[in-house]
Amino acid sequence: MTFGFIRVLFVLICTVVGFQLGSAFQGFGGLDAMIGALVGAAVAASIIGLENVIGKVSLRGLSAAVFGLLFALIVSKFLSGAIDLVPQLDVTAAATLKLVLVLILSYLGMVFAMRGRDEFNLIIPYVKFDRQDQRDDVLILDTSVIIDGRVLDVCQTKFLEGRFIVPRFVLKELQQVADSQDSLKRNRGRRGLDILNKLRKNPHISVKIHEEDFSDIHSVDEKLVKLAKVLSGKILTNDFNLNKVAEFQGVTILNVNELANALRPVVLPGETLEVKLIKEGKEYDQAIGYLDDGTMVVVDHAKRHLGGEKRVVVSSVLQTAAGRMIFAKLESDKTNAK
Image (tube, rainbow, N blue to C red; front, top):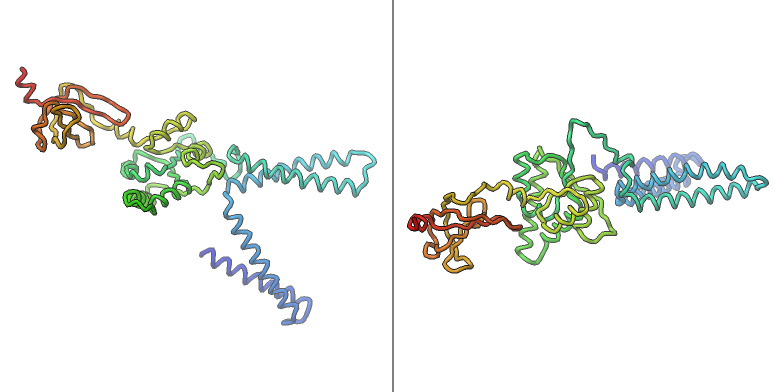
């Protein structure tokens, strides 16, 4: 049953009710009955319009406003009792003062509650009762990790568990990349959308779109950090700068690049590898090859062997922020040296 069908049915019911109420004042089918039907339809349309406006407000913002309103009404109730204790106060003046007090406190309560809605952790729709023997981690995906695509492979291995959250502002940024005039960016954006669709179709993965958008924050990275604090979640990314900023603010980061580096096989000096040399190195007579996991291998005095596979002996391993580099020598050179 769609929302459209429910709305049409609601308008018809309100129209019939208005017709019946109008006919109660005049004979069936009279002018008052028609006016009542029009009034009923107009009221239904107004309520549907109000529902559309409320639908654009985030659930957390709406619940914060309700919380602020209830708190303001409770405070105004106590203050109204204090007003009744004032001697020689006219009844009309007391009633007026109470009404003004309720209106002012209700307005202030709703405004202050909505401004501080991010700090409300016990608002009814967001109370979460956790079992001690069950984990329900919230993992927030950023644009870079979606475009990268390796998160899908990691999820299929079941090493990651929890609820995956895709913020609306991240989805918007991804759509902008997919609509870019640059063909490279456009392909990356479309790849990210394909990855999201595959994640949502996986029955073992829970993916939800989070509608909250922090309008007072312009940077997507800052919005991600803010959302992670609100939801007590972790950010899944491969963005180096976001990684550092989030860690500084106490947000847990799961970096796919760091995971990939940690899973690479350990290579020690003296071990023998077989590498295909594909290009020249920066230094004189060097050649460069790559292992299956993408690790760069720099081989000394191997330029003459470009295009072929050679057995090399590891001389040293260098770990950098961008990854790992292996420096090696041709096995034949080492044998000749002996």
